[in-house]
Length: 329
Length: 297
Image 1 (cartoon, rainbow over the protein chains, first blue to last red):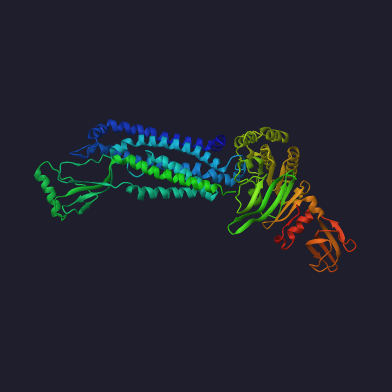
Image 2: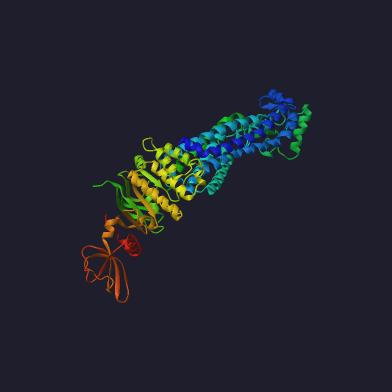
């Protein structure tokens, strides 16, 4: 059975290896140049000095960060290639697994030999899944390496799509995509419809979890500090900020999506700054910057929950696929 | 008493609301070469798929040498199956398919040499992807694979339907040679009676998802006669006739295909023997005959 699985899927394995090599050929050079510029510009040293303190005063690393961001932030779109990898494996390894057999009638050949269908599909999923697992661990590590300077520069590991390509979440997505492809194949019994169905279902489930479920995995924390204080919240911590804004003394959000620093060199300057808010009709002082956020150190908790959801779905889909396979003749 | 290779009792399979096979009962003794005949859509493939465990019955039961092909793993070892259109992995070579068979079957069951020798004898290259072979050669590879399992019951689903007459002839010859050699019981479906008439000694006739007629060919032929005589009314009783399968009348003469149950009055009727083809056609054409399956086994 192992021999058969290898013999049937070796071509797909080869193509996957080629695709990954091409991806690596693009990402390794860009990753290296990004890292050297991150260090050579002094941004790395500056951010390390800043550390993970909650508040920073003064200039911080803004100027260096801006320069680095202008140069490299746009390359973060390359991470989207990694976001697509699980479903690519689902489409090309998962969907044909059963559908191609049924389409060609070869299931009648292989299922009337000496082994049960259950064993047939479990062995196939086991081996294909193991390959998918190794690939996903590999690309998650690669993506994390590649993204680290951008993460450190304020992009944060919690950002949509950035969160999805590192840690353990890719393992969940990849196995889920493969199981989804297999199940779709048992439903449609034809390769192309199975690919279409798994693509749609994958995007739907991923979007639902990403946009609706993930923000409520854990209750967010809030942070509030006076705009006339001497520091601002450190924006390089990698927190996942849901909402932020300025609230007045009555607690009303008067300036959404903004953060204000009135801390001047002299007390008079600071007072003038605050006074202008009152004159502009924003209500009574004191004003505070406010944010609702997930702290950056919850990254691995979120990763564990996210991949747990997708691994549970994988087990469910696989059980359904085994049931379906028993009904195909 | 001979062992029963394939036994079905009230076997049925439903797709949605319509039955692909209903109330199918038959017993195929070991050592027989049975023809599974019927028009397209009569349920031939369904019966074969139930027999090899590809399908789960919705009614009744089917046993292969006393074992449930769906739930008893040992039953699979007794079965050889050549599916419709003889499906094979087109990018595999014949040698690789033989390796596959070895991997998917228990050691004591599978015999590489059987398949290899057959292909060598037929001059089929074993290092060429089977997708590049002719249809006839592919069918031979599929047969060789089924035989290498050393099955006690070999089922074939229209294996020659897509072949040209020469390849069809060669395939049947190879099949009969192998069956003679190993003493395998065979159930072979086809809608071309001519392929089967010369080689089969047992008949299973399906019509509109029912078993219309089943039994050893000799007994069936002995039990049926064609009578030609003066015109009689439809439904009139004829001494020595159990049932009239099919009747056609001209103004003065009646021709009846009947199942006999005793001597027929030879002065009144000209009595002729029937061929298997006569029998099958008469039963397929008989109106309402589906309601009363006959079992002559």
